[in-house]
Image (cartoon, rainbow over all chains, first blue to last red):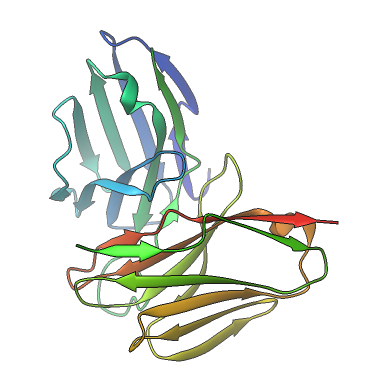
Length: 116
Length: 109
């Protein structure tokens, strides 16, 4: 596997279910991100982990719970979601540090989540 | 508040040139990115500007004017595969990316 992978690609869940999204990066990066992408809206940054420590949490509801066990893996645990949480959830990674002029983010293909 | 504006949708003809504009108002500026996103796929990096001027990469060029809070992405010799959404993002003073809603580019034969 190369780049950033995400599983599952599609997920349909009820409001009472508990599920987890998984992201894995094979790029040797030290920062990982969760974004929410809704139709015709800007990407919304949800969480940022740098060196496995959460450094950003943009007032995301507690029904979303991130976990970063190591620099290559990132999870988003979901519980008691609402229909308005239906969206594309994108994971990204980057290499942040001196000598990295762009710090561009590399994205996974996303998980299309539908909450019924 | 911080804001990135870009047109919602544009249409162009195969073989032509199209310019996608992006204006921004952010807390500080540490670079501007353009990403391409095909339907159902991940955004992929296209270009980065941090100094004023034009950056050229093959058929794609990106321009930045920091004093005007303005950038554009120029696509030449359009191909059908260029049909995608183009996302403008600005890195603010906290080094966080602020994203525009994207411009959907439709290429017609």
